[in-house]
Structure formats: C-alpha cells, structure tokens
Amino acid sequence: MLSAVNRIVARFEQLRNQGQKGLVIYIGAGDPHLVATLELALGFEKAGVDVVELGVPFSDPLADGVVNQLAAQRGLASGTTPPKVLAMVAELRKQSQVPIVLYIYFNLLHRVGLENFIHDAAASGVDGLLVLDLPPEESANYESLMSEAGLCSIYLIAPTTPEERIEIIAPRARGFIYYVSREGVTGMQSTISTTIGEMVARIRRHSQLPIAIGFGVSNAEQARQVASHGDAVVVGSAVVNRIGKHGDTPGLADEVCGFVQTLSQAIKSSATK
Image (cartoon, rainbow, N blue to C red; front, side, top):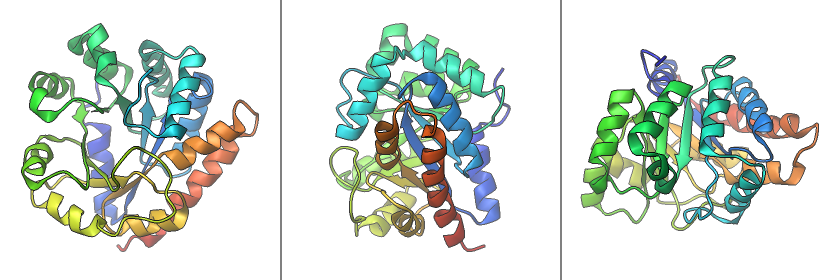
C-alpha cells in the first residue's frame, strides 16, 4: 500500500520547517549481503540519516568510481538482484519509514518492463528512483508512470550542465535535485569544489525543490561545509569504503553507523533555525 504522502517530500518538508539540513547516505545494496544492508539502513535512521540511497548492483556501473564499482561487484557476488532488493525494502518497511531511493541503471528497469518495475518498487515501499543513464528528454513515459505510482523522479545536475539543460532538467525533478559537485565518477575527495554556491544558485532559478549536494564528501568537516550551500548532503564512497574494509564482520553496522553519525551531527549542528 502506497504512502499517502511521499516520504522524501515529507522528510524535506519537515527539515525545512525545523530549519535543518538533510543527510543522504548511499550504499550498495547486497554489500556484503542484504541482511547487512537491512541492518545498516535501520542503523542509519537511528544515526540521523534522512534518506537512504541504495545502489542496485549492475555489471557495468559506468557512472561510478572504483569504490562503488567494487561494491556493485560484491553485491552481485552475494546474489543480489532487483527483486531481492525490493523484498529487502518491504522487510525494512515493517520496522522503519526512512525514505528510500534506488540508484539504478536503466537496463535493469528495461529488462522487467518500466511499468512492472515501478509498480513493484512502489508496492515494496521505495520512495524514489535515480536512473543514472536515463536522459530527461527520453523519460516522458517513465515520469508519468512514476507520478502515477507516487514515486519521485530524482535527476542529476553536474558542474558541466549548461544553463539550457538545467532549465529542462530541474522542473521535471521530484523530491529533490541531486547536484553532482564534481566532474567525473563517484569517489572521495580531499577538498570540496569551490563552485558549489554558484551552481546551486543557478539551479534555484529553475526549481524550488531541495538540492542535495554530493560526489566526494569524505568527512564531517566537508559535510558541514557543503551543507551550508544546499538543503542536504549526499555521502556515498566514504561510507561504502568502510563497508568494504570491514566486510561481513560482527562490528560492521556499529563501525559504519558510528561514522555516519559524525556526519549527521556535523550537518545538524551547522544549521541555523
């Protein structure tokens, strides 16, 4: 049964009313296995995460750097498939209402059919999809199906996105806009981009949606800095890297959620009410 109000929309509205910034955490689903993914997602909610982004394992994750490519390989090796990810989300929904976004490549949707996948995702408790390789110009049917299902279509905007494309992409997004603050693939960085403020201002000229800023945020101090420019911070590789190092160990969730909590505390404490 679908939520009456999309959880992503509701969470960002709550954050805005509280004068707070959000934290979006990306992990690879099924890394090291889906039981761990469920445990991590539950731990993230307790650690102050506002949206959990699950990368659905794919054999050719071209938008991802080495850290997330390895996570996809580990997810595939653990036998994780799109239906199993959806079943895990349905299990999560018995215990949590944390917003869930699937980070996914279009081929995985195409194989089962757009309408079927979107229906199944909504029924399982997914709140939005970020389809990495689906251009907005080719997504009319996708967007209408997503809207009918009550799901948010998340789109990426990059530093190299020209104004005319921002004008196309931004109004079509739902839930939030994901601003990729660096060129290239995903990965940790030692410094944050100096053009974030300028680009966020450009995006805001075309949409009032919350803007989540990611790609390269590696620690609490960077998260705090980035939060000052947007509505939320996305952290992926720094978390995935820790999962890769600890693997299937008893202390995995505590170690990773402890790190995530430092990010959440840095972001929340930097907000002005």
